[in-house]
Image (cartoon, rainbow, N blue to C red):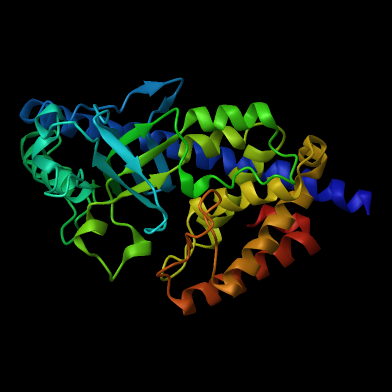
Length: 359
């Protein structure tokens, strides 16, 4: 049994050193290319409208606010200033979303974003995004990369297609530090020793982002209040949670397997589903020793089986906001197909670790 485990870990490490590292290097190269173009567009936006200041800065070989959705799809979060005159209201009525309401006694004119405040005093995510989209469209025509970048039409999101190969969504957002949403108040679960009080304090201090984007949980019932709502996002908190042991390596292998074998019609699975399942696996295996290098095979196998279960039940709850289903709106046939493909993959890896050389 131990020999079989060791064999699997050996082949997973080989897979990581060859396939995952080459994937990382290719994506890093793409990111540099894409960020040059996006920075140029955002510089033009800033000239027209100084309230939208580019926050796309490179630090320690990482671009702040950049998320990799797939090797050809990225999201850049553009942090806006001056949320201060608004109260963060998160009453659970809009799963995965919250609203920003003008604080009592504050005048509209005190806000930097005065013309985007609705009659009832809410800062409208949709209005800000609509204005930003107009500015980006104008900037694309003026920027020095105008021959290789186009706006993606027929969407209220701000999306650029670069060199006909890559799609980048630019999402206006507010960074919320020092507060924690009520809809995530149940976390951490009281009976689970992971991640420990110090890490919990770090994660909560890291806070979350409020994004101006279409919220899938509201699709089909967009009243005005809902289109004014902001989407909660916990990217930095999740990154901090997944530090230590073989967690990051495990996630990297899952992303590589997804890119190579689970990029399926209807796009049922993305990298964020993998990241979410790693967080759940950390809860199931709370001891640091469970994430020792020698346990890599067990953890990966556990996550793939959990993924199959989620796909079969057609439900994948968000880690911090369990009322939010990350499979919402995905076609059932696509989820079933993904379950079959994941099962094939898991069986292949478990019964014949050497097959990773071909995967």
